[in-house]
Length: 336
Image (cartoon, rainbow, N blue to C red; front, side, top):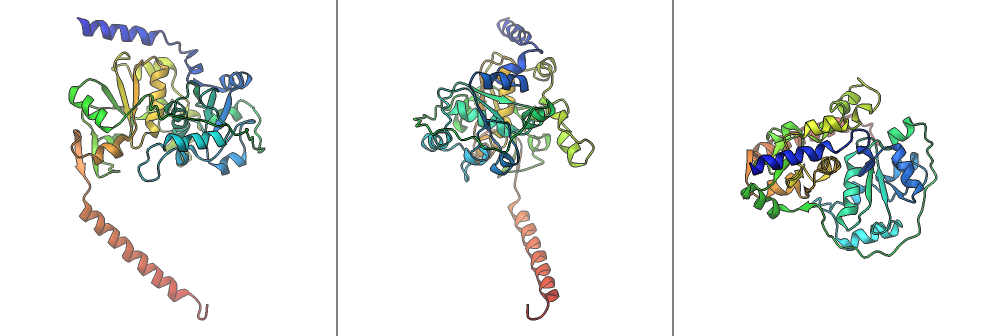
């Protein structure tokens, strides 16, 4: 009876979210971005410097690709609080006191990751412009190539790790069955057919809901690659009612842990869930890279990398490269 009441309460919580207004909280549209700018918000372009230089939203600041700046090159974890304070401070971004709206390309999970880094280091006012540069241009808004530089600020940050779990935390929840776990990777990654770590598979008990299913048309990237479509319109978020249906089997009142390969794609789904009214959402930061490498961590559809076969393929590839280099050397004119 008690569990039934909890489920009913969760369902009622979701119905409070309006499909017309849900995109003006943690996730904003072009009008929401303009309103934030009028309030004095900082606009953070999370793309790389070349993309920024080619054209960006007027007034936006950029200090490099967020995915490179805020991920350790070896472990793909966020950097220390001291490093983050220097990055934000040098860019003039007082994340502790100012509202910040982050954008990239439409549906770019790195924009969501950047916004999550604001919260990770203690900021309280990070938002995401999901439509990004694509929707800004579609709305007839102007771009500029003139960079914006803010005066540096001195920050003292703490890695508060808000909304974040680590491997031992997740293992404890898996064994206790105390959390609902969402795997936002591709179905093949989930099934252990696409292995991107020492082992494939998924966290025991996790459900598969790929992050692209948040979009109107999850196949849009593939369609763009094959030139079936010419815009990213399909990467718009589904209306709130459809998103509620997508996550309808989850309990909004229960702790919800989201993970992917390294914490980027999970950032998008985690933000969507929070926007829908899920009250206790956490990202498992090390994601499958960390979990797969902890061999004692309970997994399902578990498949280990065949190192011998991989070495064999690499040796074959190297032989082909050597052969090609030999053929090219024969074609090179004498004396050059």
